[in-house]
Length: 144
Image 1 (cartoon, rainbow, N blue to C red):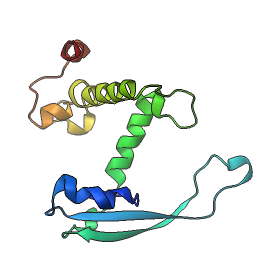
Image 2 (image 1 turned 60 degrees about the vertical axis):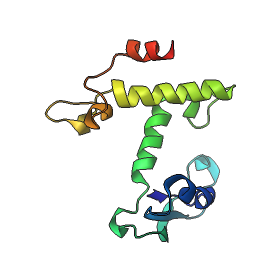
Image 3 (image 1 turned 90 degrees about the vertical axis):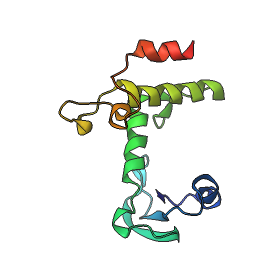
Image 4 (image 1 turned 30 degrees about the vertical axis):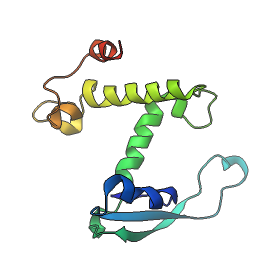
């Protein structure tokens, strides 16, 4: 397991995953903040520091790339997660429903080319928890 440098993870990882988890923290080191016209651009990452927190994580697999890719996919798929926007959830309950619907669609409805074997399949099918690509109607029926 790898997390970024957000300090709250230090207090909850063992509670959630137990003491047997191999856990590392990867902290990105940034350069100077951009100024002027590029003020909305993030600072450039100039390196990383990885630190083993518990267990024996494989140093070649200490990365936040999978989580960052999922965050980007989610931001591109749901307006409420787009940066610098006025589209946001006014109620926590609506926010929770939107996230649940997104992950149901992502895992059960949307075939992924990276899971082709020999045809694109859903993550739920690849994990063996579903035997078919779901239709949105099936998810809607679950909500009723």
